[in-house]
Image 1 (cartoon, rainbow, N blue to C red):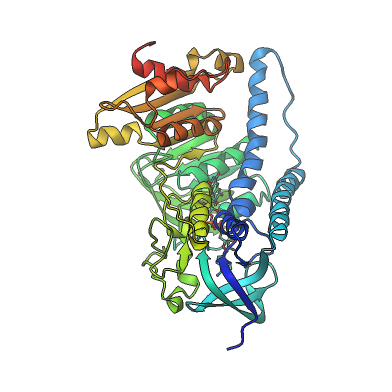
Image 2: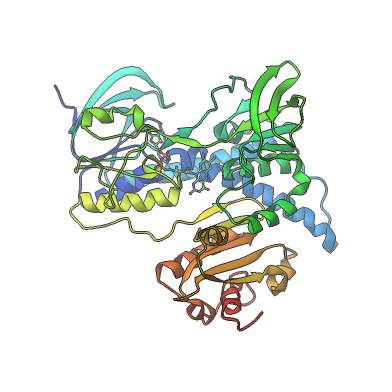
Length: 472
Ligand code: FAD
C-alpha cells in the first residue's frame, strides 16, 4: 500500500521511555519519528504520574512542615486553599515540562506524529490521527515505513471488574484532576500511588481509610521503614484495613457505599465521598497489533526482551512499563538509551544491578537493592549498619528525627548489597547508595568518604561506620 512517511527509526509512545529513545536515536544520527496518541509528549509520568503527583505533594509537604513549626514558637493560621489555583499550578508544571520536550524534539528534528499506532507488518505502522485526547477520532490514517522500531507504549490503570462508573470513584488520573476535597476518602490498594495521593488529599482536609489485600502497606519496602512512615501518619487515617478484600462498591445519592471482607474490617458497608482505586497497572502490549509485526506478547500484555532490549523480532525493541516490573520512569529512560544505542549500531546492554524505589510521602521512604526483610527470608548472611536520625544534628535542627538510614552489606565480601532510608528527602539521598552498589563499594569506602556536615547525607557515611563497628 501507499506509504506516507519513511523513517530509519520509529518510536511508538512518548513517555519517559519513548521520548528518551527518540532523542538518543536522533542524537546518534537516525532519522526518527515519534508516534504518540496524545497532543503532548511525556506519557503517564509527565502528564498524569510522577510530575503532577510531586507538584501536589510538594505543596502538601510544605503545609505539613509549616504546621510543625508551631512547636518552635512560629504559628501560621489555618491554610487557605484555593483548589482551582493549586490545580492551575500543577497544570503549569506539566505544561512547562511537556513544552520543553516538544522543543527538544524539534531541536533534534524528531517528528511527532499524533495518533494511535498499530503495526501492519514488521516494517509498517498505521497511525490513526487523534484530536489530541488519545482516542482515534478523525478517521484520517497514515502509514509509516520504518527500518527499526522501539515500542514504548507503557501501561494503563488496572480496574477491578466490579468498580462502577461514577464521578466519585477515581483512579490516579482522576485523583490528580483534584476536582474537590472530600470529607471521607477510601483508598483501595495501599501501594505507593494510593498513599501519595492520600497524603495530598488528607493534608487538604480529607479523612482517610485504606484497604489492602496483603498484610502491609507499601509492599517491597522493609517493615521497619514503613512503621516509621505509619507512626508519623497515624493522624491521617481513621481505618487501615489490612488482609482485607473489597467486595462491593455501590454509588448512592448520599455517597459511595463500600463493603469489605476481612477480619478487622467493618461488617457494615461504609460510606465515602471519594473512592480512589490504585491496585496496579497493566501493560499496553495487547493494543498495538504486535502480532502483525511478529512480536510476541505475553498473556498479561508484556513484551519480552533480551538485555539489548530486543524483542523476538531483532529490529524491533521494547522498553519501559511494557517490558516488566518495576514500572518506573527511571528504568524506562535507561532501557531507552540501551535500545537506541543498539539500533544505532553501538553495543549496549541493560545491566543495572539495582533500580531504586521511592514513596514520595512524608516522610519519604526509599530503598534499593537487597532489603533486610528479603535477606532474612533467604537466610543470607548480611551485616547491617543503621544510623538513626535522632542522632543527627541536622535532623534535630530540622525537627524531624523520626527517620533512619540503613545499609546492608554482604557478610563475607563486605560489599554493599542494598540500602534504605526513611525521612524527609530520602528519595534525594538514595542515589548515593545506588552508586555504591554499582561500584561494588564496601563499608570502608562509604564510611571514609567525607560527607558535608551537617546534612542528612552524612547519615549514609555514619551507617557505614556503624556496620564496621566503629561507632554504635
Ligand atoms: P508511559 O509513560 O505509559 O507512556 C506510554 C505512552 O505511549 C503514552 O503517552 C501513551 O499515550 C502512548 N501510547 C500507548 N499506546 C499507543 C499507541 N497505540 N499509539 C500511540 N501512542 C500510544 N515512576 C517513577 O519513577 N517515579 C514516580 O514518582 C512515579 N509516580 C507515578 C505516579 C502515578 C500517579 C503513576 C500513575 C505512575 C507513576 N510512576 C512513577 C510510573 C511512571 O509514570 C511510569 O513508569 C512511566 O511513565 C513509564 O514510562 P513508559 O515510557 O514506559 O510509558
